[in-house]
Length: 293
Image: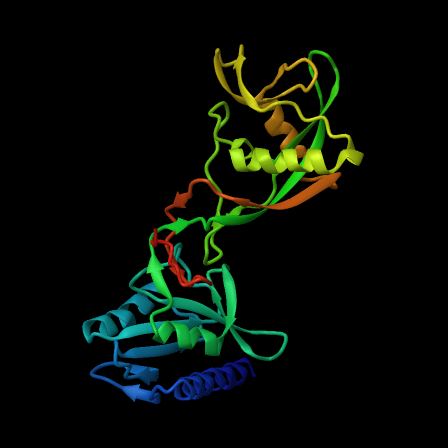
């Protein structure tokens, strides 16, 4: 029964690929045979021929690369649609355009681009064939970001006044929806919360929500006896004592498992872009790939 269901799904995907390609004005042939390969769908695209492979049954990475090498040898782009994750494929590869196909609630087929976004099969084919989906070694933040700040209470260790601190709950995103979470280290002044755009957003919340009576101290460099050095930190709004990074980190970790008292959302304009080595097949909304400066 499972083999029959898989066969029917394979045929359905194959037919939809052919139908979509022809609708887009591209010639498409089912079960096309080459020298020592057989493609589920072959598109003799003017830019570069494409062989679409539908792999619903388990297939090892080694076997997939072996089959892919034949397409590379013959100057053909092999594009793979898998249903389940491929064992030992730990990151996306430029020599292996491999995506996951799944049924959507509306019964249309969706293509999953590395959990960054899901698009219908027709849209995927249109953009992949036209080279609007490209492999990039870096993920780069888009300039405008929607950010969620979570405010929480912390008592000053010195004067015992109740303060409000905050952390950034949402990651930054690239134009193709790759999550970009900058590396942070204790006592290094590089927390996301200390970026000037984030501080400005937090202050906007304090100023616009007077009803909440938020007690947010100044964020600035302070000397720490613990590390015998100065670093950017939260501080008490009343006595200006430092809130050490270690204690702030513990408070943030506890807060992540509790109901949020206050979340404030706003849009920021990043003053400088963040780049991370995230190898991925890039499909941006605005047509600007992750290597476009």
